[in-house]
Length: 347
Ligand SMILES: O=C(O)c1ccc[n+]([C@@H]2O[C@H](COP(=O)([O-])O)[C@@H](O)[C@H]2O)c1
Ligand SMILES: Cc1cc2nc[nH]c2cc1C
Image (tube, rainbow, N blue to C red):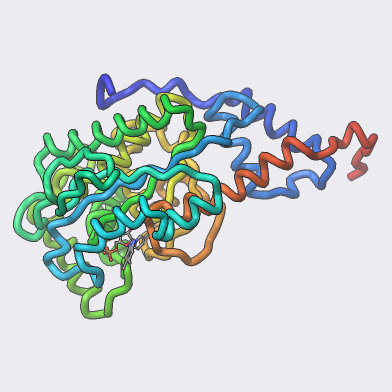
């Protein structure tokens, strides 16, 4: 990453139009494939071709711990972050199981896990052993925030250099729906009450406490909504910063990046603030169950392919959407055209 303000070449409107024409010419009712058509058009615009490249794909699972988890905002113990990092590489987590079913490579990257993962196969980009507790102090320094973005950028660059056509982003980070909600609250300028949800399932009492924690951190550290790095540093997380970096690298390389759930939305919101227009290079896979999801997606202008009422994270929803991408690829490669069958519509 040369600069935090990369110049993106832009989406090809010509390829978008050509893809829509190609789809309209297939032997099926015009527009009949609905969101699948919109997805293929989107990827064509990003990749600048009507021969979509989708075969080689890699899910980057960024893992980090959160100081704010110590404030009692999550139902899940912190150790799950490192345990599931290892279990993902062993093939036994949600994302790992789904990746097997969907022919997707998975990498786990430690950008701030509170555990020594050396020798486990997890890629070591550790910044520190987790963020600070935003109840007491900003989550990280500005320098650490930049480091996390650079780490994600560098890992994405390697994945693209290795020949991947599509990048997917997931995360492991117990407590991370708290920083994700805080980021979305600050950048969108909406009250915390509208975007703080139940994460990995918490009681009404804990939800009220979590909302108060987000409100307090925003009040105390005054993140500057016009400065994505400031927001990331004060109320963010390392895996969220790493996702931002991966998004920048993917966009620079005209590689579609498939978002997962709520934590991905928060990273996309930061990326859009940092690099206006970058959302054009992102594909929304599924609609997360977190209550702030609709607001974040509206702000980004994204419509997810799927709504499965999921809230796992890890990249799980992104990987499931590969089945739809493969389905569309098969349609494009195998179907007859209206011209071949000499079919003419009479409206
Ligand atoms: O992807 C989502 O939309 C999503 C929604 C709720 C929870 N999660 C996952 O659950 C963990 C965070 O939940 P919590 O309650 O600890 O903030 C973290 O590891 C996420 O990957 C993920
Ligand atoms: C086991 C477990 C795995 C997870 N992965 C993402 N969040 C999680 C929460 C739990 C509890």
